[in-house]
Image (cartoon, rainbow, N blue to C red; front, side, top):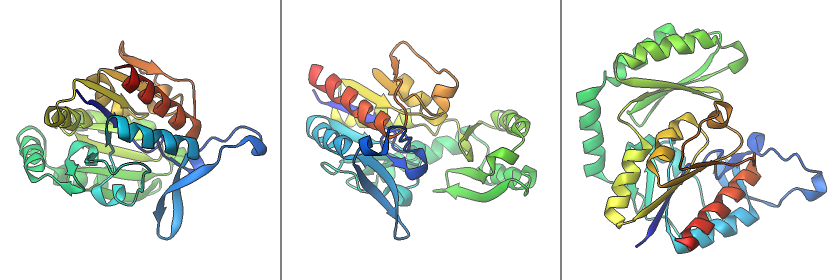
Length: 269
């Protein structure tokens, strides 16, 4: 039976220049491979060793990139290895099959959101009205599914985020602060639901997952085995679970370590 590996991308497998955490002497820094270009500029990287590990993983398991990015943001990433048959975008709102969003899955998700949550327009209007222009830099809606703000973190009143979370909770939404972004996401919109659907379709009897952020928590809890790096919101909050291994590695070398862990688990299955 196949093994399914569902992994978050940003700050789990791929890293911006600001997130690389190259703390070693320059002469000992790993060689890096650029895996994302945006507006003609290199944006995201992994180590060359990680690139080979991901190639090996793609040959040995059903590798499913699993991201909160929109489809457009995901499709500018050029990962090494075999082209994944499945990818999860928009935090589970889109299940890509050979690069195309599965319409049946998307219809199921949107129907559930309509039944269980306040509409996106209401949440977006509240965000725009309640947020302080002093610390808001951008306001975005992702694939007509959820909303987020890009903020100046040092100016942000974190009590405001707590108040927003209470307001959203009563409307079937969750709020998370991750780096410079405040996400408002409908509760049923989860990476774990999409992962379970891929497992059903592929017949996978073992699921592995990795992630660093609060939006990855449900994915890690749903998988048979999970890993998180030593950086990110989950590490900062001490998030743990019986099936989760908290790694000490930070930065781009954590991505390499996670891929080694995945491969070891796949080969030992």
